[in-house]
Image (cartoon, rainbow, N blue to C red; front, side, top):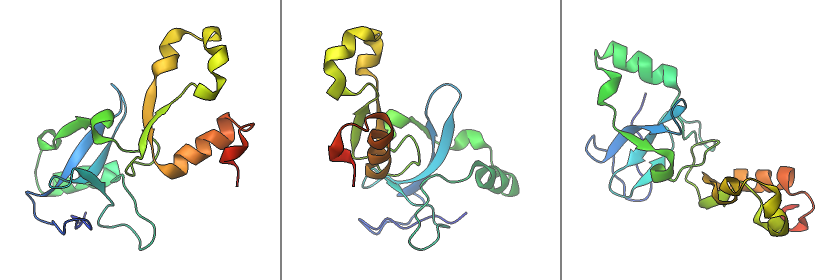
Amino acid sequence: MKRPVCKKCGASTRDAVKLFRIDQDDLHFYYQWRCIVCDIALPDGDSEPGKPRYQVPKMEVVQTSMACNVSLDIIPRMTAENAKSCRVCGAPASNAHHWLPQAYGAKLEDYDSTWANVTDYLCPKHHHQWHIVVTPTLTKWHD
């Protein structure tokens, strides 16, 4: 498991680039390298060139912690909302996305009102895919 270098500020030290546990909810989480200086997610240092991997495989984290005789409890935690990372792949997200399509605003009363304000972060790629699947009649999202 290689510590990445921040492409924005060049940071690579233990104090500047840290591994975080990102809690998505009470049951789901992933690990992610983050630059503390820039407050951004970094691709895993073991990513293939041209294929950034923003979620560090859990097994790698467990194996490394066991090999170093270090508890997983020392890994700092943050919520996915605070991390502002894509819910699907962990990449830096562009913005919060409503799960109930706002384009269907006239039909909001058909849904439980709690769904009207549920948001999650998505990267541009997964935001685009979401619209192709969920709102296919909005031609703006098709290539």
